[in-house]
Image 1 (cartoon, rainbow, N blue to C red):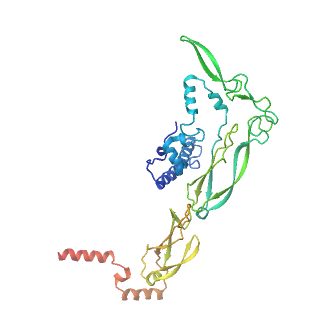
Image 2: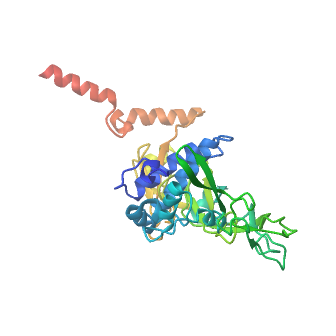
Image 3: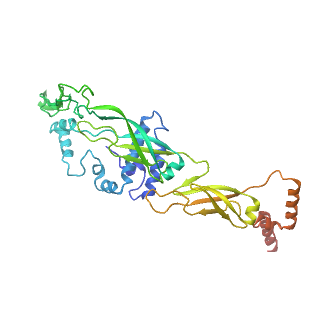
Length: 373
């Protein structure tokens, strides 16, 4: 039985979009196959987390899940109470009949695929088109997925008459009991192939390497899960193909840090620039821009460059860039420079040099107040 997807992500049913995204990113990093190579358990947990986020990040899917549970989002279940298959499976479980073999031998959805895509910081911010190659099963073109040689068709199994099951009578102390078993002739498929396709050897699909062009939207972030419907493994017996999930892995930038749609960085400034004010060059994602430093700027002062952050993936206003100034101390001064600084120190009171009261000045004031009281 599938776990509740809110439990999978560890969030409340009232969780908003940001809470869901934060929980997903944390778990996706923890269980990512690249981090846990060879760990099948981590791979299954990663798939479970990705599937849960795929539903909860889509408002329509989330609404269907909240109303019907997994049956409202599973394409194999037909959705909701209108699908009589659920009752048929229960009947089969207790009475061993009712056409379960036909469903097993019918169309089957293909498996989902995962692909980890590495992006530079800039590619994730501005979007990019990537070409990737995916090895996957595709429906055999020669037999159109039937598994039978061209010009022939699978035929209904003569032993089970297409049910996929045969009835067996067993004698027991309580009398004769009739049970249903998988048909040994067609192995539960309900159909047999007398002349298999020579291309796919009766499998109905072949392994191929498919080249796909993937459009990465602007504003993408590390851990984002892109779902490409129908680009997974081919289905069996005319069933739909699975989906392809692109997991984005964004490399760190040597200068910028990202928080949401805002960009953060640090730039050095000199004592002269900080004291007198200046206009400095600041690297941004759009190139170098001029930024005004006000007179008397202290170290760690943060300035904002509006609109120089990350474009929104869903449209709307672009984020900002926040620039923290870091005061640098000159080294290897010559004698003339040292003399000028000494003269500056003699002509300037300590509190003016500090830009604000020093810790020592505050200590002296507190001491005077204490003695005066």
